[in-house]
Amino acid sequence: MSNLENKVAVITGGNSGIGYASAKELKENGAHVIITGRSSEKVKKAAAELGVKGIVADVTKLSQIDNLVNQVKNEFGKVDVLFVNAGVFTPAPIGNNTEESFDYQMDTNFKGAVFTLEKFLPILNESASVINLSSVLANKGVANTAIYSASKAAMNSYTKTSATELAPRKIRVNSINPGPINTPIYGKIGMPEEQLNEMATTFQNRVPLKRFAESSEVAKLVAFLASDDSSFITGSEYNIGGGINVSI
Ligand code: NAD
Image (cartoon, rainbow, N blue to C red; front, side, top):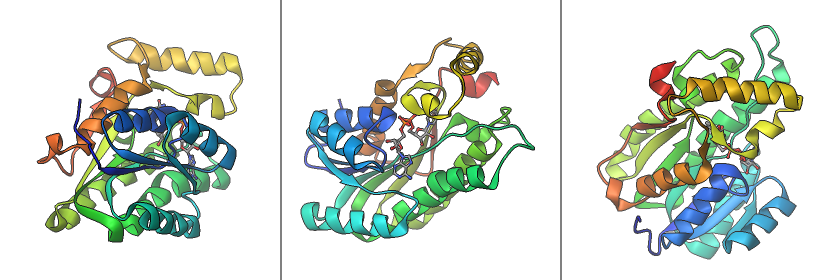
């Protein structure tokens, strides 16, 4: 168990999947947790279940990130852990990538992530930990994932530069690159169930450990990187994919 006693932790996209599991884990480790999401109903429901603070903020709308920062500052003061987790996945083959789907993924996964950190920076404590949720796909060429993978590769590049620049404030910035994790993200693609199952089987077969992981397994890594147990780790990428990062 990581000691997060009295640390203030903000998790974007905390009402579902990996963000939800991480909110639970960080809270159990002693943190004061704030989750965000786009839908007021979903954020409210998740916050009540978890016993944490919920704030509605769409990361693609910079004014909403400003409001989020102001609310967190007024209620909690400074932030110790910033988990930049909100993300979307809309796979498509080259030649079928639309401007709409490009903007949706880039605006959420890259621009949204960048401006979450940029805007929280003034209220990050010295020694804060920033964790960017990326993907093993950032370093691969898996078919149908070009724009998504590029958005996560851009995020990992930003992670490295911000780790260098924020080191004088002792702020650590790291990326987590998950492989396939069992979350609602796949159900949001809008694919027919049969095609979705086929994709899941393909992914699973590529994982040496031959399974999807549960969100709670990623949450344990989030808790480690959030805590002072990882005090000398910054600018790093952590693969958590049952070996998929070395097998494909
Ligand atoms: P999920 O769909 O369960 O959760 C995504 C969360 O992001 C939701 O809470 C959603 O409301 C939020 N979100 C999306 N757009 C947002 C926006 N504009 N503003 C605020 N919140 C927004 O999926 P998940 O699998 O838990 O995804 C979490 C992160 O993990 C994403 O960044 C995703 O790319 C990444 N990831 C997932 C997998 C996987 O296999 N599930 C693998 C690698 C990386």
